[in-house]
Image: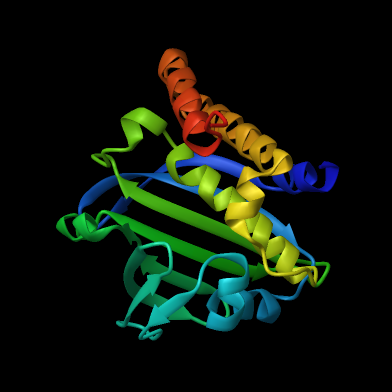
Amino acid sequence: MRDVLEELRAARRVMGQGSVPAGEAYTVELRRHYRSPVDEVWDAVTNPERLRRWLKPVSGDLRPGGRYELDGGEHGEILRCEPPQVLTVSWLYGPEADAWPGTSEVEVRLSASPDGGTELELVHAAVLADPSFPTYGPGAGGVGWDLALLGLSRLLAGGDVVDHEEFETSPEGREFARRSAAAWGEAHLAAGGEPEQVAAAVEATTRFYVPDPE
């Protein structure tokens, strides 16, 4: 459990502002350091064989302008690819999401750190009219990205394929999600969120990721 929670503490979380083609957006921003060099991290976030080991299986035309789809239903277009520094994709979920073009984008930026490792920054920008935001706040996407980056960390450390479903239902996975939801609540407050709204969003996010046992 300690190692998992240390991974959670290793990330810096910010809720910010940005834009997407559909208009003004809020951003969920994660920054963290990996000991692996930039080329290694770039391969882990773009190589389909390695991507499935920490995120989900991916298919499609994996070139700029091509469209991709993850096994969980997320899909979009590869908007920008500048190896080994920047990858930007549109990010939609479910068949009904096609009615929301240009509303959600994810960008990953990599830079070399003085110790030979990598600074990773992940920014997920979603249009302010995103229907999930009033209920969940930044935790709507933030907890999922925390879980994903935990998988990436384990992959880079030479670990096994992460079974997200198994981990998320385990005691340590449930505690990780609880603390992640609370951490995104802190980021929301720091960005000026109303305390009552933030508390309600943290509670809703926690219920979503940590449902009561049946």
